[in-house]
Length: 467
Image 1 (cartoon, rainbow, N blue to C red):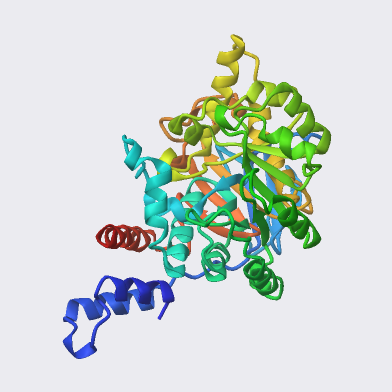
Image 2 (image 1 turned 135 degrees about the vertical axis):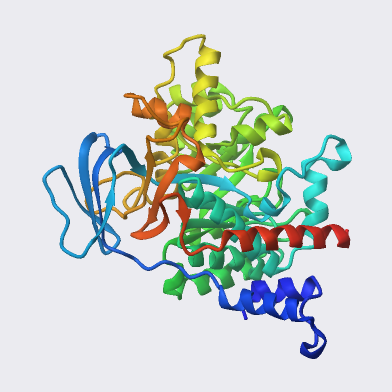
């Protein structure tokens, strides 16, 4: 039996002596065992007559063109190619095709705590997540990651960057690798600490090495990389940790200068000589003009998560200053405990509108630049721009298509504006990752999402009883 389902049945009291189990519960257990989600296979397919936003500056865009995918790779883009006999053909009429979106900062484990941040200090995000974090088993971590990944695919996100800061054991981190691999996503998992980790306790490098060796040796995880979820700028282990990470070739993610109380943290990293192209700074709402120059100079990136940043009171992302400074920018949901859901169309929309509002200029921000944050710039942040982030021959078929036939998403000749201003997850009709079709005709493939929702709800109820 699937470990997730076994854990669920055991913890909810459904896994009992067979002779004493009611027939209905036996049937439920059997249905769990029989409906294990299957990772879709790589398929060859042909998308016809579609409007393509390639996000490639040299290729540009294509109207009424076709895309031929073979062995998970984009083989050809042209208005003159025809589908080979027997290949799956996807009608792109009235559709807009673009690269799969990239989320560059999400604490996947908190997905079970959707909108659980309350309206008082005791119920706030940090104390609430610390209380719940201690209750998570590796199976709970797997469930949370799979629950998040299914929501991501449904919303057109093909690559997830998981900052795992409930890394209580290597198994708590491997859970994310397993969930992302089994659902068929591309991803990155940053091995962090956990909420109640004492500041004077060294970082778990033995655990990090275990995970590194396991994922490096298994082809199953070839599309998911391991990184370091760095501890705070004030950690006594900061410089030692970063040296070890770089010796292993790990990307480094760190929360820094998130709010006014943390102002100057990016400068501290720069003065220590730690910033570099392998560093992803999360939030940076209190970044100074001088620090923007430091980030640009060193090639580090910044990920903005506007909905969580605004909800928690960190302030507004400095989107205009960062774009003007030439910093590579990504976007993220951060945590659905604060942001509620994953909707990168809404994330891009708020960044576009915020940029124009602060500039007092309707035309200040180019919507194409915002879409780059969620595609090619996000890929650069992870060092995978050679594989994904644009639609081009030779790249992986990480593709999403939105059809212009919904009430909220239709009747427009401005595709970039339409994607950002009108697009919603429900408009995403098709998703593929490396040639694996994960959503088609608006329905998830390979995921029993009603069952997933049911187990997520029951798991949260169990945790509430355990508090």
